[in-house]
Image (tube, rainbow, N blue to C red; front, side, top):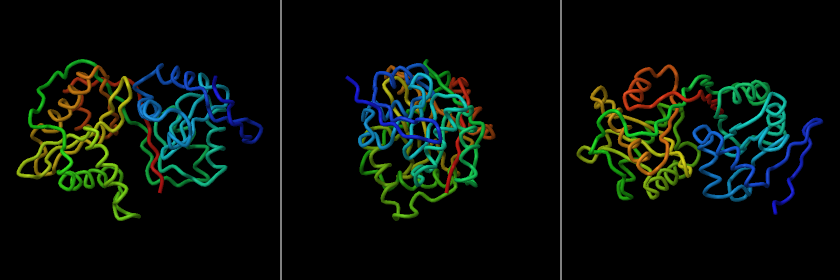
Length: 284
């Protein structure tokens, strides 16, 4: 039997922390590609806040309204009243998240409510095509791309930091000297979800399966060394990860900035199709 929800008043609305795992899974299973980041956490840790590293909020029941609030704020379901209630709840305590991410039609209205208190954002990426493939890639894979070994962490970390700075605009080593980011990258390597092509000990292509749910693997952190760009490594390397994910019985997905026409063309050559639109709001 599910535990009773924790109710909190936000204005005249009652936001609750969801305690019904089956109800959460019904929502996540409705669109596994869009919900992959949350589904991966729920699959690994359940829905208890202390385990999942955040809370799952609802206003009218998970089937109608659902939002994950942790290191990222990820709205999954809801109308404007729900999104405003989630935003009000987020603003009622000190901010814990560093970004909003998810479906653009949910993230952007929520940010509109939050902006006067949390803004200005460091960056608002309001159109990020969400792409997916569930068949073998339509281009050649790169047999030189393989799982990164634990002893290769230092070499891989150089590429990971360069990618992060280029993509997010901040150095992930700030604050704690890079210990937290190093642990995150090391955990991906230990889980077999960091992939790279090495040339003379140097990473020339990298990518990770950043989130992996029971049905979807989301590719993140695609990067090609500047001196090796224009040779098709990004296309073939991404195809390699897509083939591995699809071969495991999952859908391979990723999302990309709309202005990155080179990457979008590469993913299209792999066989990825657009299935939705994400948005990301990066906060300082």
